Image 1 (cartoon, rainbow, N blue to C red):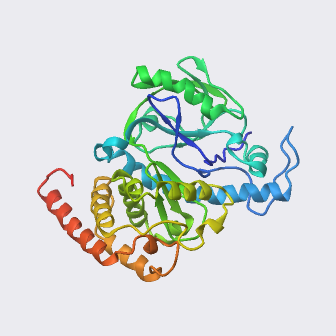
Image 2 (image 1 turned 135 degrees about the vertical axis):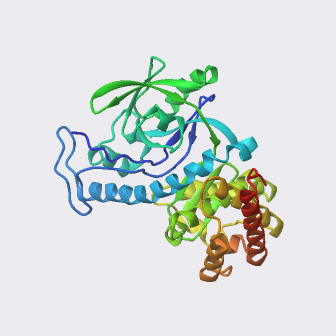
Length: 363
């Protein structure tokens, strides 16, 4: 039996109406195999012997998967429930991610194949909660065979080539006829599009406590994931990073290229952390921009069903634990803590009033 331990390194959300695949997450997703960390599995028929290095690489991918699953799960309602507010950034998405073994570099490619069971064909690595793909019954582990009767590609360029197949289909209709293989059986599904904020959601493989927005992507470092104690706290971080993108702050501050380079680097399984020395070239966010992002973020969080009451306490705890003097930390990039807390508290009260009055949650 082929293991089901699926991963999400550089995976992509499939976008309606475009020939490209929108990168929605960059690290492995949930994986399932018979391996145990530190234990080398038996050799699979027709595959090379599993070496200690290969097993260690697979274990690294598995640990990353746990972190990314949490991030992607929390981001799902923030993306879908706030499409109305995303304006320029809302797109029609199919709501799933897919990849094959070639999404991995070097030794991780081999580990993905030999240890984790990834092959030539694209496999579903995540289905966005609340999306059309979820409603249609698409599942993690499904292998993609064909779209509207056109066979989907395999091999090193399968991801980009699949985008060229999906794009023309979705430009003409509001759903995608998809043929998949599940547990050895072929199935036909119809995947309706889902309107959502089309921000790539990335995991940064670094221990600094930070999150980055370059205009089109949201990256949260593993250090920040470790600091956030619950789903609501992580939702504050994701929503606030989304808000900076929605408000165009990276472009107006001329930080987009610098932040984009950092995100590109930190998506690697073993990034060059020397890029994080000092400030990393990122300018501190102006007070007005930070306050605007906090105000919008509280609405994003509330609309997605997360608690808003603990937002100011979270940011106070973050600033007290990692103050602005700690370079390449969140507070160093967003130092206006006092003004931000005031804006958050005011917006929380405003949102509660709108809720009690059954008014739309629109800033």
